[in-house]
Amino acid sequence: MLVVLLAVSNLGTVSVEIWPFPFRIEAGLYAVILVAVFAGFVAGSIAAWMGGAERRRELRAARKRMREMEQSLARLKDDAAAARAKAELSQPPKI
Image (cartoon, rainbow, N blue to C red; front, side, top):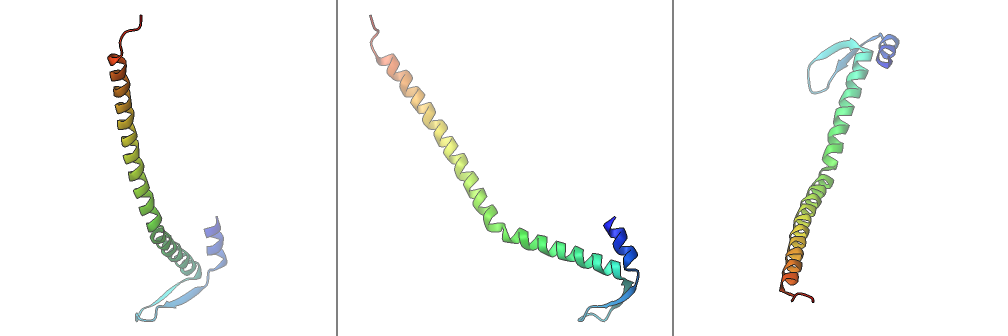
């Protein structure tokens, strides 16, 4: 709906020329606006993704450390259960 309103409101034709290139494009103003908004969205998305790289790296390291700690805890629980079982077997029977 918003795109339709933009297109209807900006029917004029503009000439777009990008400096280092010798091309000149005649396009509707609405098309130029939409392309500029899309390019800004893509550039912003890339910048945000690159800015979050360190945070993602930290999260991966934290997840790896958490898995290692969970495995270590499971081994300790198994060792404790084995030690309790061994202690129960080594005690003399109660009369």
